[in-house]
Image (tube, rainbow, N blue to C red; front, side, top):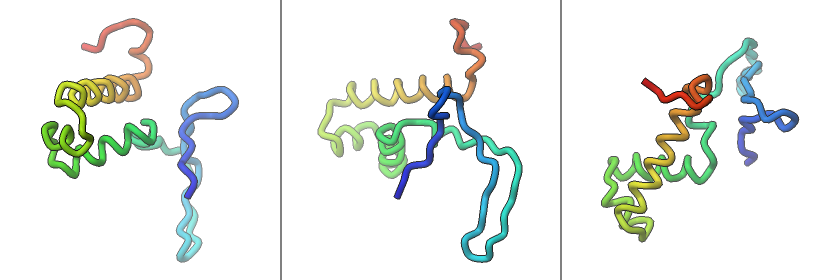
Length: 99
């Protein structure tokens, strides 16, 4: 299965969904829809978040599953959190700190 593109291949701007279709009855809904924030993460980051949720948010369990140290897993989560913050608030990415 192909991955959902989230950035424009020409200018790298964030894509939006314009049409959704039911493959069962062919109902089509048109409009302009934001993609969910988590879809804007890399596939590796999405996998990490999925495993984190499945391990009930336990960094200790994540470290065991990934065979990494707890601080390494904590740092990876912190990096993903920062990317999510930037994705949610793109206007704040011009050097200003979030409140």
